Amino acid sequence: MNTIITLIKISLIAMLFSSSMTTYAKNAEFPGRDRYPKTAYISITDFQKVKNEVVIVDVRSAYEYQTLRIKGALNVSISDRDFVESMTKLRTDNPSKQIVVYCNGKTCMKSYKAVIKCRQNNIKNVTSYDAGIMDWAKTYPADSVLLGKSPVDPKKIISKKVLKSYLITPEEFEKKLAGRVLVLDVRDSFQRDGTGLFSGKERNVSINDVPGLTKYIAQANKQGRTLLIYDAVGKQVRWLQYLLEEKNAKSYFFMKGGSKGYYQYISKKYMN
Image 1 (cartoon, rainbow, N blue to C red):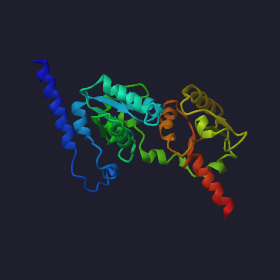
Image 2 (image 1 turned 120 degrees about the vertical axis):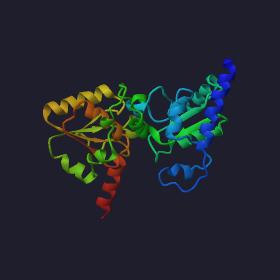
Image 3 (image 1 turned 60 degrees about the vertical axis):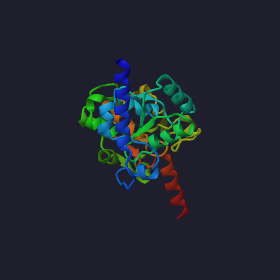
Image 4 (image 1 turned 180 degrees about the vertical axis):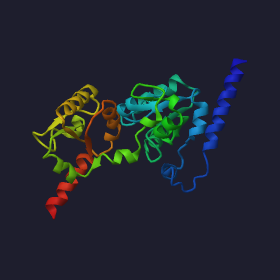
């Protein structure tokens, strides 16, 4: 009897995933579906129905995962060297379960790439939940975790509009250096390659170093300084903003485009 029930559940799950595989018309909302037309995906509503019957894998960085994630998800970053090995083990440990991978949102391609990488390495039954963590947290806050807490307060989900209000151009960033500021280079050591942008004026603290970041936030608040923060390409700071808000950072800005954007700005400045 239990075997029959299990088979019925597997069949129902398969039907849900199959229903998500539509004809691939041009899709402005989900550009990845056109870019990767052979990649299986599942909708947010169908995913909610089967979330307890599948293996959920967050393929983003550890920092993103620790900031905001789907409850019960495992973290296997697609950028990890042992990604294929880890996914192979998950398949071996869960031979009959569908594996659902996800990343940030509708324009994030990591979940599609994870499915393709698995397919290329004969890891079967892997599907992309391509609406991503942001839509999930807003729609199902009770099934989400923000900074270790669940349910998530939807009001604490930081929108792109709010994030943009904290982004300043490299030129504006440079001008603010003359004020009462504390500059933080939050790139990893391999990204930094031993070189900072503002020698003698900045502190190096990895975005993964929460205690270190917390220390500098407290220091800036106490001394009345504005935090000027930059990463490699301007994308990681989105997740750092949650920590800044939780620790009540009084004044802060991010450099648009990160160090890459700054190098482009300097190049144009001195080429003209």
